[in-house]
Length: 318
Image (tube, rainbow, N blue to C red; front, side, top):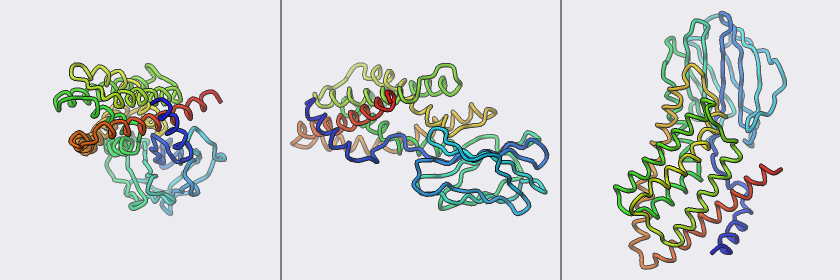
């Protein structure tokens, strides 16, 4: 089995675009330091093939770039100053250069304490800044959904759990334990209480998938306490979620709500895919080639996980 998993991982290595955690929103932050005067930070994903996006401000605003763009992690960061002739509220911003995989989160902190969070996309790149503040950063909910649905490693982990858990009630307890665990480490990491280097967390997540692949291949069933396994591995996956959220950034004043909505988005994403995964595994179990399907699924999950592990460990070493 180990040889087959290694062979699968070598085949998958030829696909350079096989990535996990592909949450790549841009982020525009405007901090009003004086009346109608803003400090601006524009973060755009550096791994996007198109040229960096740009922001079109109202005609009565003038932007001055303070420094050349620099690379911070996966983002190209540009700092600038913005001076407007009137209040930015009730005016329109337009973000150009977005793509299907790259939305833009807009955060504005006004001098009088008001704040605004908005999300624009390639299909809806315009944003009217409202006259009243929105206290709840609900856009983090959609970012959480997007992260779960685009995070292939998390999806594979959920699918692997369904393979080895017996009974719907046990499955619900297992997924709940996974949720609670990654919520704990997500909060601890984002609040700087306890952190794990992102590269190390990603490598450990790959190891959890290799373990699941072995369990699936051996057709092992957990009837008693699979939630312990899910809870332990969920702690590691929480650091992966935290890395994605930290790269996006968030306002300190809305940290609790940002965490809450991001977590709710992740759970909503899990609920979206869970019935589909359960149906797949149920159909597999009813098929006459169950052993073949479990072995094939094991090789596929293990091969992908081995590829990720090699890739991520290499990044740590190099």
